[in-house]
Amino acid sequence: MIIGVPKEIKNNENRVAITPAGVMSFVNAGHKVIIEKDAGIGSGFTNEDYMNAGAQIIDNAADVWMQADMVMKVKEPLASEYKYFRPGLILFTYLHLAAEPELARELKEKGVIAIAYETVQVGRSLPLLTPMSEVAGRMAAQIGAQFLEKPKGGKGILLAGVPGVSRGKVTIIGGGVVGTNAAKVAIGLGADVTIIDLSADRLRELDDIFGNQINTLMSNPMNIAQAVAESDLVIGAVLIPGAKAPKLVTEEMVKAMKPGSVIVDVAIDQGGIVETSDHVTTHDNPTYVKHGVVHYAVANMPGAVPRTSTIALTNVTIPYALQIANKGVHKAIMENPALKLGVNVANGEITYEAVARDLGYEYVPVETALEKELATN
Ligand SMILES: NC(=O)C1=CN([C@@H]2O[C@H](COP(=O)(O)OP(=O)(O)OC[C@H]3O[C@@H](n4cnc5c(N)ncnc54)[C@H](O)[C@@H]3O)[C@@H](O)[C@H]2O)C=CC1
Ligand SMILES: CC(=O)C(=O)O
Image 1 (tube, rainbow, N blue to C red):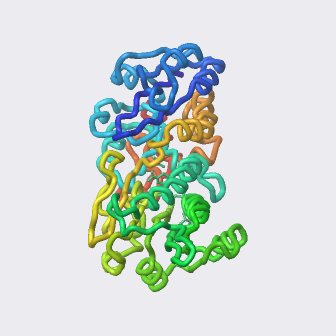
Image 2 (tube, rainbow, N blue to C red; image 1 turned 120 degrees about the vertical axis):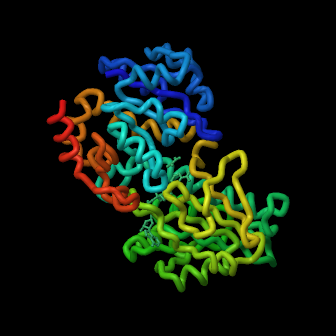
Image 3 (spheres, rainbow, N blue to C red; image 1 turned 90 degrees about the vertical axis):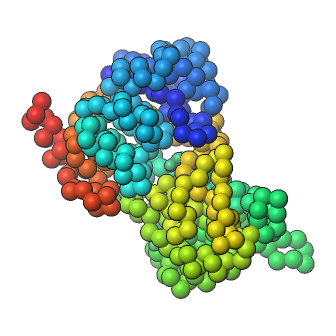
């Protein structure tokens, strides 16, 4: 199989979908890897590093997309890349389709087999999302602390406080991977941390992990309203896999926050959990102020720490990509239930139920979509 890796084009997206070590794994298994020139530079991998591992460097994105059987990316394709979609192309990347209706339509109409990192699932865990959630969670607390500083637009609070002055209050809504990692850093910074989750079992686990370093609260509108109003920093970290994020923090709740408070809505890649995080921001211009509250809504937070993130991401994606290359996409999907759950679009059908529901399409199970493809071949 020919595996193509274009350079990421999203604002300040410095990650790349493959490392030289990954290239070597594919080449050793008899595959060919083509990489767009300078695709790895932002993550510290030169063209020579890739060539030494056995890859071929290609001068432009179009040739990478058109020659590849499987394109591996980090972020969802942007509109300027839709022209490369074609029937049977395998696309393996983050997609977040519930928040990307145009992209979903293009993938469906053009017959791409689109496998989303974020919905590959083993039991209750999402192994291809986890490392980036670890990164984004840890970043969320440090970014929040930074934007609470007065010169950055915040109210001028030091989360750690000092002797004689209260610590800052951080509320984390969603106690999964992002939430847990945000808590680790927020606790390390000395903040007064509350985690809100819908799952009583998860709250018990968090209590076991952090003990009395955190407060835990059951997720309901009353608890959320009260905690948000009292917080200096709110971190949005809820996920319902594949689905659009629920708007748990209403505009009224935001209005009740003190001016200069900060919201870091990490879940913005699925649409965000805060009613007033109504648009995605970029690393170039990461915040806006609404009702006096600083909103940070960057959908590719790990892109700012690309060396760490690229290695962490490819550690988990390459084994799945190798299965696709070695077995062929149909066999790999049908033999691996985790990978099967990653398939969001195939042969003109939406094959992930939550995406189909949120975007108003008929849901077609992966097997049915693939059988249709085999039948028409
Ligand atoms: N902006 C960015 O750059 C990045 C964003 N993310 C996003 O962060 C979000 C969180 O991801 P993970 O922590 O990995 O997910 P996760 O599945 O590990 O955790 C989600 C948590 O939300 C909880 N939850 C569900 N419904 C809830 C409700 N109504 N109230 C409170 N809690 C509720 C679940 O019980 C679970 O503990 C996702 O949207 C993910 O895509 C992840 C990495 C980077
Ligand atoms: C998960 C995701 O969207 C990211 O790492 O950018």
